[in-house]
Amino acid sequence: MYKFVQIAIFLMFSILWNSSKAQALFDVETGIVSTGYNDVRIPNNGGTFFSLKDDLNPKSKLFYRLRASYTLKSRVTISLLYAPLEMVSNGSLTKDIIFRNNTFAANNNINAVYKFNSYRLTTRVNIINQPKIIFGLGFTTKVRDAKISLSNSFISTEETSVGMVPIINFYFWRRIKDKFGLFLNGDALFASRGRAADIHIAGTYKYSDNITLRAGYRFLEGGSNGRVYGFALFHYGSVGISYTINNKQQNEI
Image (cartoon, rainbow, N blue to C red; front, side):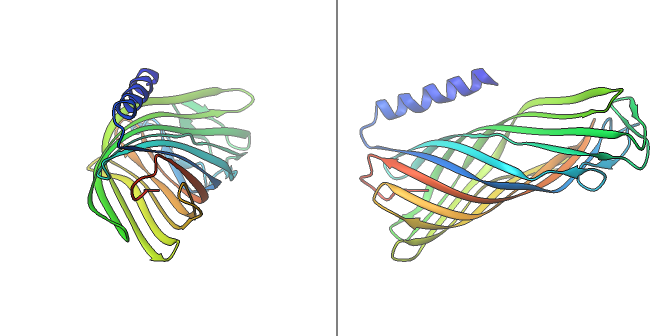
């Protein structure tokens, strides 16, 4: 995973260094993330179905995301995203559950940690690139570093998952009036035994030639139904700021 990130960073900086027409953008997003649902059964055959949202008490928390991107000749954008996520749930279960072949007895306090860190390399082509509207499609290589752990006074165990998956990326920005715009961006993939969607909608404000501000809503949803069962939904209330370098063309968000 870390080698993938190192290679991605090297490729991006190589492109920028060798192209005087490249537009660099650095973006920070933050806000509050909360759990919509988080259903688990591990293993899928023999484990107990339970919810980290309904059976335990998840805590909302601050989040952040970091992104760097380069747009070449106003058409091709290459970006690297780091999106960490770790949610904690606590409480006492009303029933015994089997998790990774361990039995967690009812009426004992349980601490659960759900981690889903994401590293993504995206290449996208702008199909429409006009002063008032930008629309692009591309592909994202997503590397996940995931974990679900349960612990009480007697038992501690965790299920980890590290993997890579290609997903579809889309981008839409529309100028509404003067410096204000509407922004829709996301990665999504649906398959027979799983799905992944990370979609963001926001209003934008062009503060200066180099700085764009935004505020909006994001949701992260997905999971798999294979050896393990796990599907989760997270809601984000977010604000973000983008800083553009070498801004000689229509800048993206």
